[in-house]
Length: 142
Picture 1 (cartoon, rainbow, N blue to C red):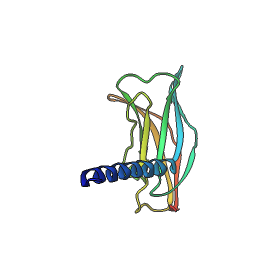
Picture 2 (cartoon, rainbow, N blue to C red):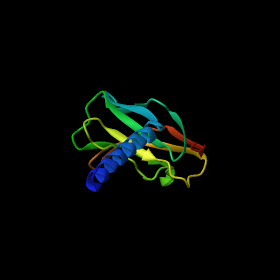
Picture 3 (cartoon, rainbow, N blue to C red):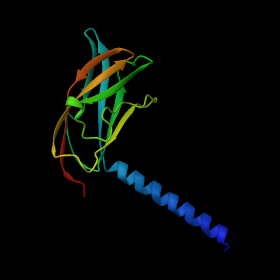
Picture 4 (cartoon, rainbow, N blue to C red):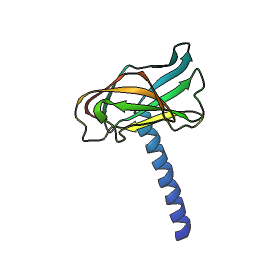
């Protein structure tokens, strides 16, 4: 076997192992659903898990389900009390893809505590507060 072929095969094995590890890491996180709808009194949302318990270095995913389609330029954003976010991003927002998702990772330096946050619908200059669930960080992963 030539050096080039051996290098190529080791690259493929490395990429496969990395993809498997990334998938296992993402699957170990928490997932919940935020259902968004518009009724006669305006926009509303319901988060599946009102209280989520996480550990450091754990990923969190919120999947956005639209019972009523969001306006074209709108997105869902999470805002934490006084910008006290337990995640790497201060204001995680959805990716605006057809299957809307908000993803965040708990870094290592976060304090064990309860972090209250609000779910907002942001449409240009118009912002609508939808609800206020809680994230609880408790200990290290693993």
